[in-house]
Length: 367
Image (cartoon, rainbow, N blue to C red; front, side, top):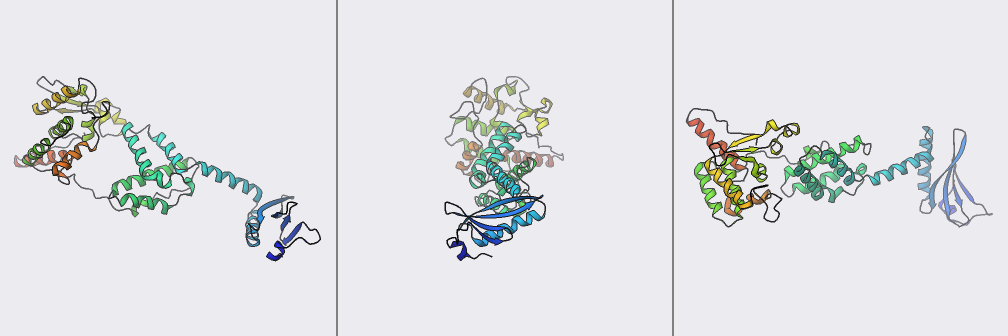
């Protein structure tokens, strides 16, 4: 068997091959380079496999490579063919980065998502996930790498965002497995490692007097007129803030009559996908005369078509999610009341009144 000293020494008697045993030898090329080769037979045919140049591949490493190849050969696998397959697989994995697979998954899922939700999902992936693992081959991503990026999200105090990110990462791995790109899902059971989400009611004022005081304080502050009008209509109707932001002029009917209503299309409501496509699931909100006045003023401000509560900068976009929230925070109601809290206020007040009158209130709605 060879020694390192023999591998380094000049060839003796013009020998071009230095044999180590079991078919492994070091071939000295005309260029002077020394290459590890292994001679073997499979199906009666003699073949050779190259392990690399010496000294980059040491004698010890060459023997280990020979043993691995011999082990494959004993199972009936041709090491040369296996090497080609491994190289092809590695190249394919390099092409299938987490980001490329995630974008493929997103393209498929977008058919089921609302356009706004699809944009939100992609934005969260771009902000929280792609910077950490987007460039990595998806088949090589490990659980610790995913835990690290989720912990970073948690450190911002966003446990709910971390849980949603974990679920989307898991869904992307499922897509990769179904596409024969990956073989396991390292994010599947990781939810247990995250901080629990504390479910609870949205911060909200509890009485009519508190609600009146809140509106008085909020509306005394300088703000974009449509923001204050949106806040007041939210308080008067208790719809979801997303529904209100996307309200359009044509949805309001009989504003000058005896039965004014807000006809909210099913597509804008929080429903299952099949129900959002069914017009019969539209929701009708009866409007008080105060709500009618708010709607009329808002329409006069923005025009007679399209969105009512438009962005300051873009007429074809609604005010943002955070617009009314920011107004409440700046008015001193951080942690006391949120825009979505009007639903809780509405429910609390009506249930209290119903209890006083000995009746059962049904203050909740699907909007």
